[in-house]
Image (tube, rainbow, N blue to C red; front, side, top):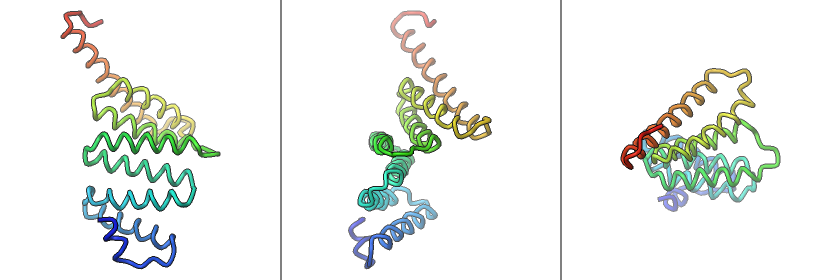
Length: 171
């Protein structure tokens, strides 16, 4: 599908191609066609890789992870989220806000898979990263803290249920 989209328009330079992909993704988003946004976003990732701009590439991967998350393709969502973090580790001047965004998206994806121990670790790291930017704590940070606490609660419930199945009493 992406090949067909790209062939349908002539691109005199990479900026035009990049802008056209963003326009297509936006149009699809407005129409609620999330699954069709994925190949367009893969094109954005490919075009962004050519630029060498670490932050833009990490953002592109993170956006892809969010799309996969929305369509419940959790394995792909996790791979893209981890790739965003991997790419962002190479940013010479990282932003705590961006890092928190990538960490928290991975936490949400892991939680959606029921992998709460891993999710909590990334959620707490995300909250710490966000805390640098949201100081004093604001509604955004408080909402992330509450979401991390909910993940922690689910993790504890899952651990209690596992202990009950094993015949041990939960602590």
